[in-house]
Image 1 (cartoon, rainbow, N blue to C red):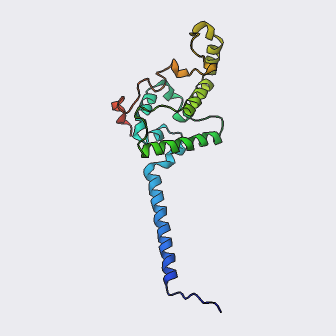
Image 2 (cartoon, one colour):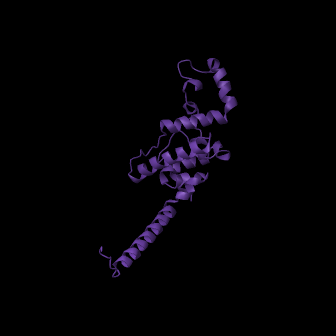
Image 3 (cartoon, one colour):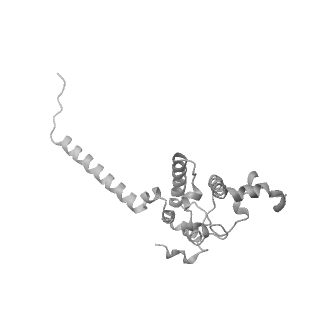
Length: 181
């Protein structure tokens, strides 16, 4: 016959250590979620964007703009054409932001990515449909022919630099922005 495994308490100790390790890992995970305010990123609250202090300038300049009355960060910076696209972009941006902040690889004058700029442009045009179509149809009357038009890739903020974040942005440009709690 084969050897029978004789339990002299070692198996029981291994189970207890495994359970204790699992409990400690779960507690640590919950603490990290709490500490990082991770659940706030599932909301539309613009204050979620300032969990990391590097976004204080963007939050403050938005808060003092006309856009703060009607739209949040999400409505400008994320796709509005469906939940899947919205959360896909949120996950990608969240991963990129987290790695940049953790490893300190971001430029202190934060600039939007091409993908992000494309989303913002699409949302600008979507919210301001009548203005955008008027500009497009009257472009030959009111715009410099040497520049590209809205339909051809010109970004809304090439003219509207102050909307909604102002033209000077960086960690030191709005020193009184820390009034945000």
